[in-house]
Image 1 (cartoon, one colour):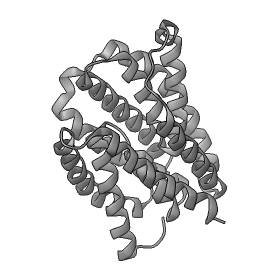
Image 2 (cartoon, helix red, strand yellow; image 1 turned 90 degrees about the horizontal axis):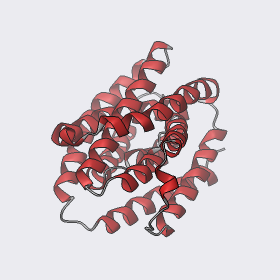
Image 3 (cartoon, one colour; image 1 turned 120 degrees about the horizontal axis):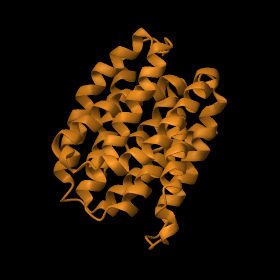
Image 4 (cartoon, helix red, strand yellow; image 1 turned 30 degrees about the vertical axis):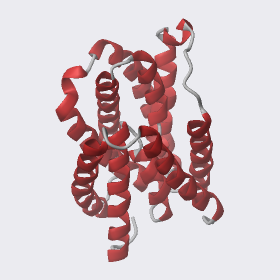
Length: 249
């Protein structure tokens, strides 16, 4: 990470508060918001590891209130794929994580993801989508993209929305997935020596930011229309993604 500057710290705090607010209000979105902005300042690897560490804290904070709704049997199936994806992502990020061209890849992926989330319609799906192979594949894709870009959440969101009608079960299992996959990734990179000293400053500041943002987000969960939260978050991510594509050399 670059040398410490006050404006950077303020910028990062703002990103963390907004991203954690979105996740508190909708169940996901912290990675989308944060990874749309952090790579402007940091390398992809540093950005991903910072987001992972704070996702761990953020998910744990939300889980502390709804953990009793976790269903471990169905969670294990998608996690089996997610851990394989995260292991593959570890080797990829370790090798290519400092290369700036990946920021443009991230920007393109975020644009496509935003367009999908804007225009997709809720539809009933056939029973084939609920066979075990589907969560394993979705978990592997979400695990890999989450492990490289820290934005694999939509793959898990899609599956748990199909699986659960109860929004508390959906959110609890989603947050448990974020927590366990983030923990796995951080253990891999930590044992490899990928976490540097300046990381801890932003992490410590980020803890307070995500607690504040997620607490506010949870309070607004029943007040703000979820569609509005989604549109605001996606608009912010789209602007950040275009910046990554157009203005990174």
